[in-house]
Length: 133
Image (cartoon, rainbow, N blue to C red):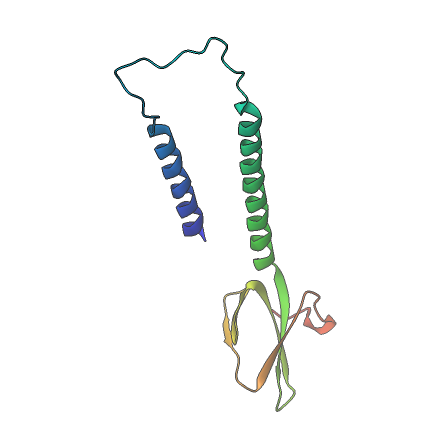
């Protein structure tokens, strides 16, 4: 994830450097033509709008990155039920640490599910899970 952000910042930096180095090509032999009544500069509204759009994009991406991190680090309660015996075990894990058939608990244990077990998740703990992981 950090690599994607660093790559994006690198691309932006390269574009800014190219934009600053590039100059309009004009013949050296003659001076540029001077207008008697030059038109008023109308670039500020467009430049301001561009800066506002870029700022809005940065704020939005920062907010979405924060929301993704917050959702992934939320602690949820997991109940593993063995379908053949009906025995259940309860664990706590972060939402981002849950895979297809495995998860890592908050205390660092890696749990791999068998084919006969099913995984139930909840954000609310069951009353009998108060003393367990």
